[in-house]
Amino acid sequence: MVIKPKIRGFICTNAHPVGCAKSVENQINYVKSQNVKAKAEIEGPKNVLVIGCSTGYGLASRITSAFGFGAKTLGICFEKEPSERKTGTAGWYNTAAFHEQAKAEGLYAETMNGDAFSDEIKKAAIKKIKKDLGQVDLIIYSLASPRRTDPDTGEVYKSTLKPVGQGYTTKTYDTDKDKVHDITLEPANQDEIDQTVKVMGGEDWERWMVMLNEAGVVSENAKTTAYTYIGKELTWPIYGQATIGLAKEDLDRAATAIIDKLKGKNVSANVSSLKALVTQASSAIPVMPLYISLIYKVMKEEGTHEGCIEQIEGLFTSCLYAKAPATDDMNRYHMEGKETNDATQAKIKALWDKVTQDNFHELSDYAGYHHEFLNLFGFDIQGVDYEADVNPVVDWS
Image 1 (cartoon, helix red, strand yellow):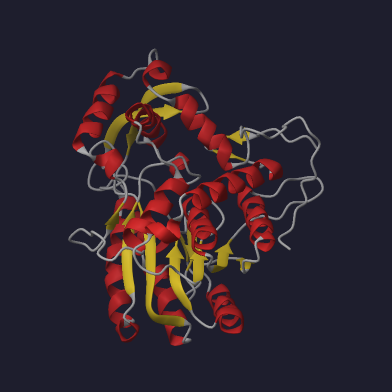
Image 2 (cartoon, rainbow, N blue to C red):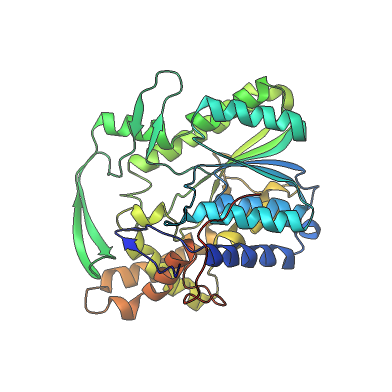
């Protein structure tokens, strides 16, 4: 079939297998070009578990581990398989492409497709690690989901994107209607806050680490990190000082708990704060399409723009595998400084104050935002013939 993007709201409901494969190839080539083993100050990972491995920062982490350090990788994701009549998800095709590239280079790569919040997947992953790897020395936690079923109670929790304390009115950009307008968000109630923390906080990360440790599959001096975005003034009301921000703060609690519960293994657990990028998760958050369009404009002009793979390659070489990595008072790693420094933020704030419906496309880099949005699903990637007839059915063998 000839596959064209089908966009509905903030998501694309289909994906292009050849485009996704090309995107994965491009990221692999970037990592290979960086000679990360030489840049890292200490020995890199050997056996890596990536929880949320199929898109965005999780995929970039798996690529960096495998093609930068030669690590064996076990991935966990929750993706939809294609059929003869319907494409699979982008994550499905990304994973298939990763497997193909890894196999070609003799790298171990296995992936489990299922609900990472469930104990069934955790137990299956432990069994696989025992059989194939023995132990893991790096555990990446990179999940983004709107809901979570509690494995103890069976209760389903749903996340909410709302401010906390009081309502908030700000600018946003409606990608469907190509319209800059004001949006008013009502404050979350306590139940909405609690449910969001249950879904997006650190409880599941901590559960993974405890179960892995109790099963004896975490190596001495292992490392684990969970990804977050903290942002600055323009995004704090909807991100940092909001339901999602409180959930992300719970990652700090979990990191401390993991260190304490696994102290016999001398495990390091850090939250890693990364820059704002176009991802399937960020596209759903009010304000973020407008904010990201503006930061792309400023950072490209400054020559500081980075994508997922550049951020993660830097995280591995300057933080995870550095001799004395810098952390803040909450023991977090920070890779977002090129975005959040005062000078860059002042430029973004100036554009934010000026931007209107009439000048949005002039003042922003929405073209760049939309290009990267399409890239998430394998579209608008150089070197791909989008008029060609392609088979949507691709497997992970």
